[in-house]
View 1: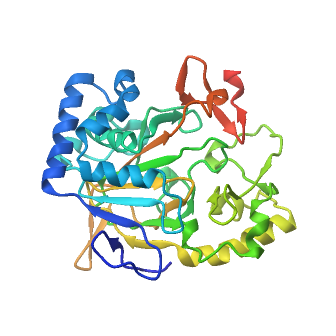
View 2: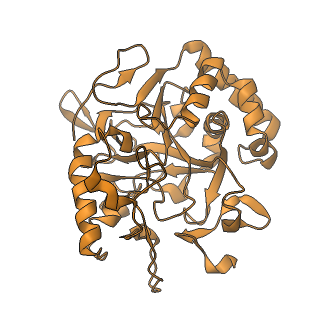
Length: 366
């Protein structure tokens, strides 16, 4: 993976397309903190349906004007110059004492400690505007925000709970037709100084003719390994690239589509994927190490994400390895339109997505 200097707002455009980092000012951070405190008192929880329903209007009222403009531009910019990721540096002050010790896994996390951070993230999605939603495929729903915490029992896995291996870049829920449009990752704690990885389909100079097979529905796009069940599924094929032929979107998961030994792509599909990966892997950006309070906002159709391998609960101080609290990252997902995916949501709750795999819903909701 190449190490590159991140493109700051004030810097000149470099030859290679990079994500944009926005340094949050003290006044902007204070405004967001005060907004979260006010909204917490008014609504109690960021999952309060009244709050979620009004999140667009509330974002336009509470977020600083500069950030609102950045979000509005980002949400509808699919151009060759749009990387598909915004990095908000220092968006929120994190109270590490209030968080306390990092729990052993996400199942034992106390989400009441993340409530203010949930309001802040929801406002960012609302400013796009996009609506926070939850997916049954993710922890059987699990709410609008997920704590991503290293789990010793899953350290070797290609999941957010893993740590011992690089997490290959992937678009979130590539196996869904109605995957999230936008993702936010708030870093509550990262004492191990784990770099994040990003890969944008716009990083390629062009979509060459030999990439054209990626637009054809010939690829197996399996569910994540930790979501697969023993029941044999109807094999559904789909495209990796879609939308505009010159400036496409992508549905890509290197670990599952290329490196999962149980997935046997056809020779044609495997050749096309491998050729794509041989170029893509050199375009992965890995030179940003998030600090507590940073947020990465991702267009899930343009930009894939991952992270480097690390030793959970160990930090390096001047060449000396010391024990530390394990990292905590909060993930929120959102959709621009609830109507487009209505066939794949609960009848009584259009914010709850029940799609299981490429247009097929979970049977227990049918």
